[in-house]
Image 1 (cartoon, rainbow, N blue to C red):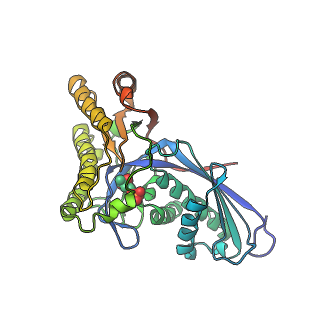
Image 2: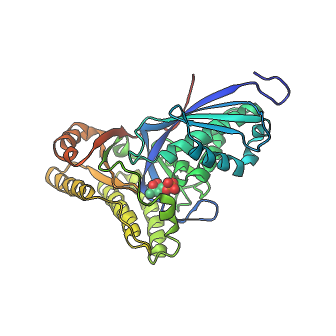
Image 3: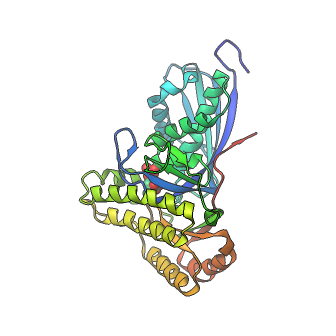
Amino acid sequence: MMNTANTIEQLKVTWRCPSNIAIVKYWGKHGKQLPCNPSVSLTLNNSYTEVDLSVSPKTGNEDVELSYFFEGERNDAFGKRVAKYLADNIEHFSFLKDHAVEIQSSNSFPHSAGIASSASAFGAIALAMFDVEYQFKGQDIDDAFYQKASNLARLGSGSASRSLFPQFAAWGEINGLEGSSDLYATPVKNVHPIFHNMCDSILIVDDQPKAVSSSVGHGLMKDHPYADARFIQAKKRCSELLEVLESGDMDKFITICESEALTLHAMMMTSKDYYLLVKPNTIEVIDKIFKYREKTGVPVYFTLDAGPNIHVLYPKKYQSDVEDFIKNDLQESCISTIFDHEGQGPMKMNK
Ligand code: PMV
């Protein structure tokens, strides 16, 4: 409801944005949240953040007036991070001049489940903010909307930039991917049917907060002895992965995916302030996956985020075999499992 030319009494939008899992990993950043190497990820479906964002006339005179709630409770710690993020990017949002914002955020997955909640949270916040701005300007949602939101999501959490697109998305400039940029993610469109409907079962082996945050990890790439070689490798692997996605070479896909997971953790183990995020059960599960694949020929493989939990990936065609394998052989090494799969990207909800 509009009361004057530029003030709205109340407007609410709701966006659901999924998390994603990187196949080629982003690790190391520079400048204003720019990646040292490009990355390619798979967007998930069941693991998402939903954000209700309401605007109403301002009551105070702060640049950004924000109330932030997580799962129904006020969360001032994360709220401060989001308020700073909005203040840093205030030039995109004319409505912030006269309006206060309330964000109610909730996740579909348990806290500390090892799922990148910052990716889905910043994705959903960026979409909701631009939706409101577009409504103030009387603009319709178009492709540019998603690109702008991806750019903004990146500034909150790099990996969030990729969550805005269905299936596979790339962030960072990649040889062979037209329109790719370090500023926002680009959807990967030429994907062979063998890679459609990929399943991702997330095995939680440890649900404690991480000992070392991803931002500290990114920072340790600054004077890392292997940094230059790693950035060259990741760039090359992104181009290779795009070719593999197009040609349907599953074996090569598996090699890139698993090697990327181990390379990411090798970077942590070989940085000046070295650290180890994998747990004995992480190794045990990986070993069982190698053996099962060797024995059965089923294309089941793994990747890791910056944590100890294992993403077990496989084509939907093998779902019943792999779920039996998970239940019979892997679940004894984990606390819980989240069964997820490739998703279609974010969704505006009508509430
Ligand atoms: O987006 P950040 O700052 O949380 O970093 C994500 C880093 C990895 O998840 C390890 C890799 C990636 O590309 O998502």
